[in-house]
Image (cartoon, rainbow over all chains, first blue to last red; front, side):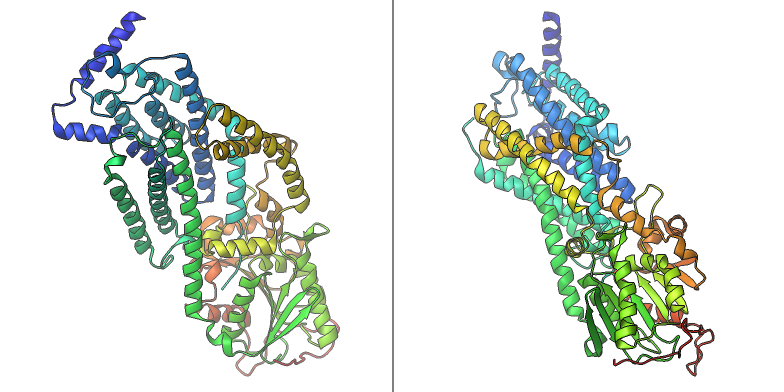
Length: 201
Length: 439
């Protein structure tokens, strides 16, 4: 276990060592690291995914995919809270000297919350829509890398977040009963509204 | 904990709201959703696209121009997610409201054209409403229109009475029952229209035997289903089914209300037609309510115990989601995977056995149906031969573009210049050809 933590720290020093050397790079990483840019962009991508179909048949699949993303987020958040309750790993800047380009988060480091959330968006969208799902990957990767670059997470935290996200998204995708009631509700509303075709002036 | 960034929550919500609204506008322009376009509808799709792009770009520029949103501690992940979901919901609601408002202003500005000066006689019956315009002429030169229930349809028929170049009178029948109302497994409106025809002949002496019949929208399907009965009682000269609803292979029906109806139109249409089973709806609410109260109490206890932010809002909200999840399984047990409104109404799209009667019939499909299911859908519904009007929208059928003349040509082709019809069928009871009524 010790060697694994040492390896994690070594990789962290490689990535965090790049910080503070180029102002432009630092600004870009700070932008990707922040709590709003990538998560909200991923959220808007879900809306784009839901509306991107060519007909009502597409829309039903895409709406179901969007619902599954949010259910997967709920499942991954619950698993994350469980992990955080069980494992208390301090942030890198607590135990080591790091180049910190971000504010000092006060919660535990393992697993990475932003990596879990952003990769849940990616995996969940990708499981449902193999073509559009790839659009979720670059923001998720950039945010996860930026968290290590800015000194607020170890690479191991990010890796654990990615695994947690993949497991949650896969479970929601495979265990249909988790999302079926919400998919049925959304499809029912869609059917009610869009089938209300009438002649009018 | 303890820090609450109220101002930031509002700004984050507004950011989500504006960007979501922009995305919806871009989608509306791309998909041709006239009913959701804020300005200009389908005609000015590029303008809506530009408006949507501007909202997205300005939303991002405004929100991230504040250093608070770039690299300092502010609202937590859960509140961000709540802001996102509420922002999207509010954007959808505001789009619906604004799109309905702008379209009603456009309709107001357009006015009702020649329809304002047209003299029509409105007759109220227990089965519905009948509207008569023009002098009831010789047999074969008049038109009987079977129209959908609802205010939108009545406004459409006012235009039809005004714009249609009819050589005789035009009688439109508006049944009282909404499309969701059944009698003996069939739509109650069909029987109401037949009764109104009989009543008009009996009480007003209005003879519709040998006349042209036109069914509009859902009533085009009804007219095809009634073809045999109409043939038996009135021997129509011709039957035109204009913009019927056509089913799809999956068991739903083709067409998309958003293409030509605003959200307000859709809501009024739903309230009028009530396409749901009221007993099943009452059962579902009765089962869900106690489940919601229990789930909300449990979830609120958890949020209070763990000190979750806004515990008395987040608790019931979580309880609502949980209750919907829990109640779905017992309610869905033993049910086929039908799709609500469509599952209930799709049978009404089928033309039935009567569609094979010998009265000459023509089906005209609008762009919505043509684009989605076209000929295949019409065949599935057992409809007779038809033509596709790819340049016409269902909801804008009779406005501009010479559509009224096109309909008139289909109905009255074969009527000679001096007013004699080439193929006037004999009256079923052998009586005289034409009667007149006040216009």
